[in-house]
Image (cartoon, rainbow, N blue to C red):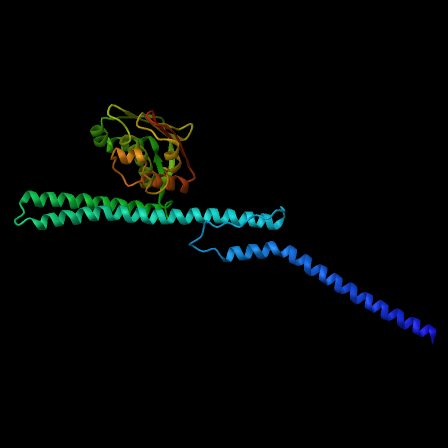
Length: 302
Protein backbone atom coordinates (compact mmCIF):
# COMPACT_ATOMS: atom_id res chain seq x y z
CA UNK A 1 0.00 0.00 0.00
CA UNK A 2 2.80 2.36 0.93
CA UNK A 3 4.49 1.50 -2.34
CA UNK A 4 1.33 2.27 -4.34
CA UNK A 5 0.82 5.54 -2.50
CA UNK A 6 4.39 6.50 -3.19
CA UNK A 7 4.00 5.72 -6.89
CA UNK A 8 0.72 7.63 -7.04
CA UNK A 9 2.26 10.63 -5.26
CA UNK A 10 5.21 10.57 -7.57
CA UNK A 11 2.93 10.44 -10.63
CA UNK A 12 0.87 13.36 -9.38
CA UNK A 13 4.02 15.35 -8.62
CA UNK A 14 5.50 14.55 -12.03
CA UNK A 15 2.25 15.53 -13.77
CA UNK A 16 2.02 18.79 -11.87
CA UNK A 17 5.66 19.51 -12.56
CA UNK A 18 5.17 18.80 -16.27
CA UNK A 19 2.04 20.99 -16.40
CA UNK A 20 3.88 23.78 -14.59
CA UNK A 21 6.86 23.43 -16.92
CA UNK A 22 4.63 23.51 -19.99
CA UNK A 23 2.84 26.60 -18.69
CA UNK A 24 6.14 28.34 -17.94
CA UNK A 25 7.49 27.44 -21.39
CA UNK A 26 4.25 28.57 -23.05
CA UNK A 27 4.38 31.88 -21.20
CA UNK A 28 8.06 32.32 -22.14
CA UNK A 29 7.37 31.50 -25.79
CA UNK A 30 4.42 33.89 -25.79
CA UNK A 31 6.50 36.71 -24.35
CA UNK A 32 9.45 35.94 -26.62
CA UNK A 33 7.25 35.72 -29.70
CA UNK A 34 5.57 39.00 -28.82
CA UNK A 35 8.95 40.64 -28.39
CA UNK A 36 10.16 39.26 -31.72
CA UNK A 37 6.99 40.17 -33.60
CA UNK A 38 6.62 43.63 -32.05
CA UNK A 39 8.89 45.32 -34.63
CA UNK A 40 6.97 43.56 -37.40
CA UNK A 41 3.67 44.72 -35.92
CA UNK A 42 4.99 48.28 -35.72
CA UNK A 43 6.20 48.03 -39.33
CA UNK A 44 2.83 46.68 -40.46
CA UNK A 45 0.98 49.48 -38.67
CA UNK A 46 3.26 52.13 -40.16
CA UNK A 47 2.86 50.70 -43.67
CA UNK A 48 -0.93 50.61 -43.40
CA UNK A 49 -1.02 54.29 -42.39
CA UNK A 50 0.81 55.51 -45.51
CA UNK A 51 -1.15 56.89 -48.45
CA UNK A 52 -0.66 59.48 -51.19
CA UNK A 53 -1.07 62.31 -48.66
CA UNK A 54 1.86 61.33 -46.41
CA UNK A 55 4.45 59.74 -48.69
CA UNK A 56 7.16 61.50 -46.68
CA UNK A 57 6.47 59.22 -43.68
CA UNK A 58 9.24 56.73 -42.91
CA UNK A 59 9.33 53.82 -40.47
CA UNK A 60 11.73 54.23 -37.55
CA UNK A 61 14.58 51.75 -37.74
CA UNK A 62 14.78 49.25 -34.85
CA UNK A 63 17.86 49.36 -32.66
CA UNK A 64 18.93 45.81 -33.35
CA UNK A 65 20.30 45.30 -36.85
CA UNK A 66 18.50 42.07 -37.66
CA UNK A 67 16.22 40.92 -40.47
CA UNK A 68 13.48 43.31 -39.35
CA UNK A 69 16.01 46.18 -39.48
CA UNK A 70 16.96 45.28 -43.06
CA UNK A 71 13.31 44.87 -44.04
CA UNK A 72 12.47 48.29 -42.59
CA UNK A 73 15.47 49.85 -44.31
CA UNK A 74 14.43 48.33 -47.66
CA UNK A 75 10.89 49.63 -47.17
CA UNK A 76 12.13 53.17 -46.44
CA UNK A 77 14.37 53.06 -49.53
CA UNK A 78 11.42 51.93 -51.61
CA UNK A 79 9.35 54.83 -50.24
CA UNK A 80 12.13 57.25 -51.19
CA UNK A 81 11.98 56.03 -54.78
CA UNK A 82 8.18 56.02 -54.80
CA UNK A 83 7.99 59.57 -53.42
CA UNK A 84 10.50 60.77 -56.02
CA UNK A 85 8.53 59.15 -58.84
CA UNK A 86 5.24 60.58 -57.52
CA UNK A 87 6.66 64.10 -57.27
CA UNK A 88 8.20 63.80 -60.74
CA UNK A 89 4.84 62.68 -62.15
CA UNK A 90 3.01 65.60 -60.52
CA UNK A 91 5.59 68.08 -61.76
CA UNK A 92 5.47 66.57 -65.24
CA UNK A 93 1.67 66.87 -65.38
CA UNK A 94 1.74 70.45 -64.08
CA UNK A 95 4.48 71.51 -66.50
CA UNK A 96 2.79 69.77 -69.44
CA UNK A 97 -0.47 71.58 -68.65
CA UNK A 98 1.40 74.90 -68.46
CA UNK A 99 3.19 74.35 -71.77
CA UNK A 100 -0.08 73.47 -73.49
CA UNK A 101 -2.04 76.27 -71.84
CA UNK A 102 0.38 79.10 -72.70
CA UNK A 103 0.01 79.02 -76.52
CA UNK A 104 -3.74 78.50 -76.17
CA UNK A 105 -3.96 81.59 -73.94
CA UNK A 106 -1.98 83.64 -76.47
CA UNK A 107 -4.28 82.57 -79.29
CA UNK A 108 -7.37 83.34 -77.19
CA UNK A 109 -6.01 86.78 -76.30
CA UNK A 110 -5.28 87.54 -79.96
CA UNK A 111 -8.83 86.54 -80.88
CA UNK A 112 -10.29 88.77 -78.16
CA UNK A 113 -8.22 91.73 -79.35
CA UNK A 114 -9.41 91.12 -82.91
CA UNK A 115 -13.05 90.94 -81.77
CA UNK A 116 -12.77 94.29 -79.94
CA UNK A 117 -11.90 96.06 -83.17
CA UNK A 118 -14.98 97.27 -85.03
CA UNK A 119 -13.58 96.85 -88.51
CA UNK A 120 -10.31 94.87 -88.43
CA UNK A 121 -7.92 95.67 -91.24
CA UNK A 122 -6.06 93.16 -93.35
CA UNK A 123 -2.95 93.81 -91.26
CA UNK A 124 -4.91 92.97 -88.09
CA UNK A 125 -6.02 89.68 -89.60
CA UNK A 126 -2.47 88.92 -90.72
CA UNK A 127 -1.14 89.61 -87.21
CA UNK A 128 -3.84 87.39 -85.72
CA UNK A 129 -3.03 84.63 -88.21
CA UNK A 130 0.66 84.88 -87.38
CA UNK A 131 -0.03 84.60 -83.62
CA UNK A 132 -2.25 81.56 -84.18
CA UNK A 133 0.33 79.92 -86.44
CA UNK A 134 3.09 80.38 -83.86
CA UNK A 135 0.82 79.04 -81.12
CA UNK A 136 -0.13 76.01 -83.19
CA UNK A 137 3.51 75.32 -84.05
CA UNK A 138 4.40 75.43 -80.36
CA UNK A 139 1.52 73.13 -79.46
CA UNK A 140 2.44 70.63 -82.18
CA UNK A 141 6.10 70.65 -81.15
CA UNK A 142 5.21 70.10 -77.48
CA UNK A 143 2.80 67.24 -78.28
CA UNK A 144 5.32 65.58 -80.61
CA UNK A 145 7.98 65.84 -77.91
CA UNK A 146 5.65 64.29 -75.33
CA UNK A 147 4.83 61.45 -77.72
CA UNK A 148 8.55 60.84 -78.27
CA UNK A 149 9.15 60.66 -74.52
CA UNK A 150 6.36 58.12 -73.99
CA UNK A 151 6.67 56.07 -77.17
CA UNK A 152 7.24 52.35 -76.43
CA UNK A 153 8.68 51.71 -79.92
CA UNK A 154 11.67 54.03 -80.03
CA UNK A 155 13.91 51.24 -81.32
CA UNK A 156 11.74 50.44 -84.34
CA UNK A 157 12.87 50.80 -87.97
CA UNK A 158 16.62 50.93 -87.31
CA UNK A 159 19.15 51.39 -90.09
CA UNK A 160 22.85 52.06 -90.57
CA UNK A 161 23.52 55.79 -90.33
CA UNK A 162 26.57 57.87 -91.25
CA UNK A 163 27.00 59.96 -88.08
CA UNK A 164 29.29 62.50 -89.78
CA UNK A 165 26.72 63.08 -92.55
CA UNK A 166 23.99 63.45 -89.92
CA UNK A 167 26.08 66.08 -88.11
CA UNK A 168 26.52 68.00 -91.39
CA UNK A 169 22.76 67.86 -91.93
CA UNK A 170 22.17 69.26 -88.45
CA UNK A 171 24.65 72.05 -89.10
CA UNK A 172 22.90 73.02 -92.34
CA UNK A 173 19.42 72.91 -90.77
CA UNK A 174 20.53 75.10 -87.86
CA UNK A 175 22.43 77.57 -90.05
CA UNK A 176 19.62 80.21 -90.01
CA UNK A 177 19.39 80.10 -86.20
CA UNK A 178 23.17 80.17 -85.84
CA UNK A 179 23.42 83.15 -88.21
CA UNK A 180 20.73 85.02 -86.29
CA UNK A 181 22.53 84.31 -83.01
CA UNK A 182 25.96 85.20 -84.43
CA UNK A 183 27.28 81.71 -83.68
CA UNK A 184 29.63 79.70 -85.93
CA UNK A 185 29.05 75.93 -86.25
CA UNK A 186 31.87 73.66 -87.42
CA UNK A 187 31.87 69.90 -88.12
CA UNK A 188 34.92 67.68 -88.30
CA UNK A 189 35.82 64.05 -87.71
CA UNK A 190 35.91 60.69 -89.42
CA UNK A 191 33.58 57.90 -90.43
CA UNK A 192 31.25 56.52 -87.78
CA UNK A 193 28.51 54.06 -88.69
CA UNK A 194 25.72 53.65 -86.11
CA UNK A 195 22.55 51.55 -86.02
CA UNK A 196 19.68 53.76 -84.94
CA UNK A 197 16.28 54.92 -85.99
CA UNK A 198 17.31 57.60 -88.48
CA UNK A 199 14.83 60.27 -87.36
CA UNK A 200 15.49 59.72 -83.64
CA UNK A 201 19.26 59.82 -84.08
CA UNK A 202 18.95 63.07 -86.02
CA UNK A 203 16.59 64.45 -83.36
CA UNK A 204 19.04 63.66 -80.55
CA UNK A 205 22.02 65.31 -82.31
CA UNK A 206 19.86 68.23 -83.46
CA UNK A 207 18.63 68.96 -79.93
CA UNK A 208 22.16 68.91 -78.51
CA UNK A 209 23.51 71.27 -81.17
CA UNK A 210 20.43 73.51 -81.02
CA UNK A 211 20.95 73.93 -77.26
CA UNK A 212 24.61 74.78 -77.85
CA UNK A 213 23.54 77.51 -80.29
CA UNK A 214 20.63 78.91 -78.24
CA UNK A 215 22.62 79.04 -74.98
CA UNK A 216 25.50 80.88 -76.59
CA UNK A 217 26.66 84.45 -77.13
CA UNK A 218 27.09 86.53 -80.24
CA UNK A 219 30.50 85.70 -81.71
CA UNK A 220 30.50 82.28 -80.07
CA UNK A 221 31.19 78.88 -81.59
CA UNK A 222 29.84 75.33 -81.60
CA UNK A 223 32.32 72.61 -82.57
CA UNK A 224 30.90 69.20 -83.53
CA UNK A 225 33.46 66.38 -83.59
CA UNK A 226 32.65 62.85 -84.77
CA UNK A 227 35.14 60.20 -83.61
CA UNK A 228 34.92 56.76 -85.17
CA UNK A 229 37.66 55.33 -82.96
CA UNK A 230 36.04 56.46 -79.70
CA UNK A 231 32.54 55.99 -81.15
CA UNK A 232 31.28 59.32 -79.89
CA UNK A 233 30.02 62.70 -80.98
CA UNK A 234 31.42 65.65 -79.05
CA UNK A 235 29.62 69.01 -79.06
CA UNK A 236 31.62 71.87 -77.56
CA UNK A 237 30.57 75.50 -77.19
CA UNK A 238 31.73 78.64 -75.41
CA UNK A 239 28.26 79.79 -74.39
CA UNK A 240 26.69 80.75 -71.08
CA UNK A 241 27.34 77.32 -69.49
CA UNK A 242 25.54 75.62 -66.60
CA UNK A 243 26.03 75.34 -62.87
CA UNK A 244 26.03 72.05 -60.95
CA UNK A 245 22.29 72.20 -60.20
CA UNK A 246 21.41 72.75 -63.86
CA UNK A 247 23.60 69.81 -64.92
CA UNK A 248 21.88 67.60 -62.36
CA UNK A 249 18.37 68.56 -63.50
CA UNK A 250 18.89 69.17 -67.21
CA UNK A 251 17.36 65.83 -68.22
CA UNK A 252 14.14 66.38 -66.25
CA UNK A 253 11.14 67.03 -68.52
CA UNK A 254 10.26 70.75 -68.79
CA UNK A 255 13.28 71.81 -66.72
CA UNK A 256 14.40 75.36 -67.48
CA UNK A 257 17.27 76.95 -65.55
CA UNK A 258 16.80 80.38 -63.99
CA UNK A 259 19.49 81.73 -66.31
CA UNK A 260 17.66 80.55 -69.45
CA UNK A 261 14.40 82.04 -68.18
CA UNK A 262 16.00 85.37 -67.27
CA UNK A 263 17.54 85.63 -70.73
CA UNK A 264 14.20 84.60 -72.30
CA UNK A 265 15.75 81.77 -74.30
CA UNK A 266 12.89 80.04 -76.14
CA UNK A 267 12.11 76.39 -75.47
CA UNK A 268 9.85 74.02 -73.57
CA UNK A 269 12.50 72.16 -71.58
CA UNK A 270 11.81 68.84 -73.33
CA UNK A 271 14.79 68.73 -75.68
CA UNK A 272 17.34 67.18 -73.33
CA UNK A 273 14.75 64.76 -71.92
CA UNK A 274 14.16 63.46 -75.43
CA UNK A 275 17.92 63.16 -76.02
CA UNK A 276 18.38 61.14 -72.81
CA UNK A 277 15.37 58.93 -73.55
CA UNK A 278 16.58 58.11 -77.06
CA UNK A 279 20.18 57.46 -75.99
CA UNK A 280 19.12 55.27 -73.06
CA UNK A 281 16.87 53.17 -75.32
CA UNK A 282 19.86 52.43 -77.56
CA UNK A 283 22.33 51.76 -74.75
CA UNK A 284 24.43 54.90 -75.24
CA UNK A 285 25.69 57.36 -72.65
CA UNK A 286 25.79 61.13 -72.32
CA UNK A 287 28.43 63.09 -70.40
CA UNK A 288 28.22 66.82 -69.68
CA UNK A 289 31.05 69.08 -68.58
CA UNK A 290 30.05 72.70 -68.10
CA UNK A 291 30.89 75.87 -66.21
CA UNK A 292 28.98 79.14 -65.96
CA UNK A 293 30.32 81.76 -68.33
CA UNK A 294 32.77 79.36 -69.97
CA UNK A 295 30.71 76.96 -72.03
CA UNK A 296 29.60 73.35 -72.23
CA UNK A 297 30.99 70.14 -73.67
CA UNK A 298 28.64 67.21 -74.29
CA UNK A 299 29.89 63.75 -75.25
CA UNK A 300 27.36 61.43 -76.87
CA UNK A 301 28.91 57.96 -76.70
CA UNK A 302 27.38 55.44 -79.09
